[in-house]
Image (cartoon, rainbow, N blue to C red; front, side, top):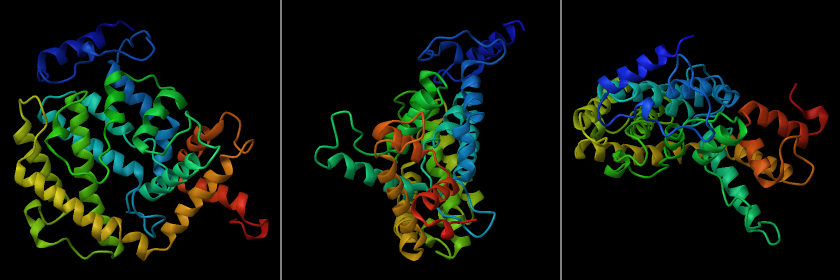
Length: 345
């Protein structure tokens, strides 16, 4: 296949994308150099490598917020990822940024998440910190905690060995805000504008779809009227936030929002933490059970000779547990901790 197909795509990017966009022809390259693909740009290859990887496929059986919900319409970590990608690509297209890079970052941004969503992440973080602080256990090279964005980068670099570009890796490793407010700094690129778009799109997507899932579950009836300016349903809220980002970022070297809408988003995020994310574990006892399960699995696999072949040490235990789906974690716990007569069929 002649290379002119990829070269034509690269030339179109140079001619049509924003001056502030990341162009494939100007990529810093990969950790390990390799020949170019005859058809796809480097960012298209990144996207495809993530999409076809086993860690990405496991996202369909990992919790977003609600653990093992009774219903087919609740989000999983994979559907969240796809919604982030859609929101980010909409913004990126309007701003004439590189949609291939945006999609690659979006598809990979949560690939390091644990089973049971953020509840599992907090549990694994606590278990690792507890182990590292114990006398005679945590050496200088012992991990001191767990963060899913750091694990996402470890997966693409060391476990799945995807050899992604520096631009995609920078977006994956720097996307997470946790409970922190979005600020003007989040729109100022530490790597690329495309990475900033995904960071903001992650917040837009989860605020919108988590409200919808929380209403479906019965935790909340509706959000306070003070947030009506965003819209009355998920579609309207996403539209309002996306359009605000586009209007204030067009032809600019950073990604911005109006101060009023940024403040409204941050206040909505805090309301969601107080009324959904922090309240949910107190209303549903399965959350603490799932967290205890993650901790017990870590305490088992961190012991010598308990890990399967290919994993080693504290980091190996982290890698193995973080890679589990919800159901595989439950099956493994059942096999290790329950008498055979009590195990799930």
